[in-house]
Length: 335
Image 1: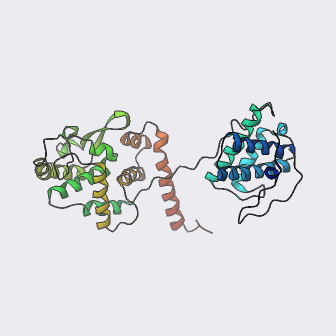
Image 2 (image 1 turned 120 degrees about the vertical axis):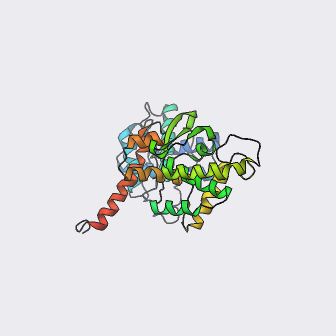
Image 3 (image 1 turned 135 degrees about the vertical axis):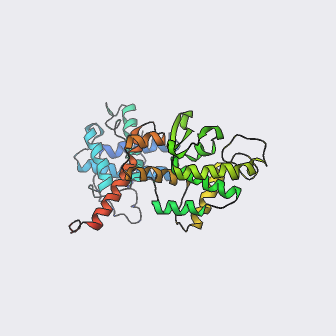
């Protein structure tokens, strides 16, 4: 494939980025130009995407030149992984990139090497098992015990819907149930018993209809009992005899969106700022259990996680809390 003069011309530096020093063009530069022409003409890549690829691969070519590579056949996996590292720390003299931008660049590099291997320009593909950087796990958002208490108390009202709201939110925090699990419950899925016999038991159906039994604490049990005795019958009278545990004002099964609205109203009434969702109560349930000394395997069972690895992200939250307390309290924590 013949490279056009305009395609070989160095791209103008992006705003805010220093100009790349002019260096002699190598066989790698020409092979990159062929790849870009292939992507633009035969693959129909959009102009903006093609421009991004050109910037990314121009930086790659510069890195390779600095590493002593002038032909595609000289590039090894070590060079590719070194470039990936340079994208994150700027050790090649370029701008250190965030995870998303670095991942886009790695995708361009992988596509380049795959093309070269398919075209016979190289005998191997050194980038085939080099993967784009992945964003770190987002720590689950939890609120304090005091904030949870204020929300639960704000939801209480001596009306049918008020009793339902308090029971629903107490239930979510007491069990760590997903909102889909809570609104999908029927009356027969819970077993309220005398407090002397221990916590009430709830049967939840998680992802893949996997069933698990979860204890319901005394606060949740009392709120649920009040709702079942004084609230639900009034709501059920307006419907058609659904077995659903939590009912809407028309006597039908409450929706997930309605549950979000109930929690949002309670959080606003309690003057809790930020985005508080039903999943926030689930996160808080797990975090507060671990902070109270619960074993991570027990929390895994309560949450219905298939793998303990999923649950262990909550241990990062509690570790951060420990660091904050230590830094604030220990006389020699900070220099």
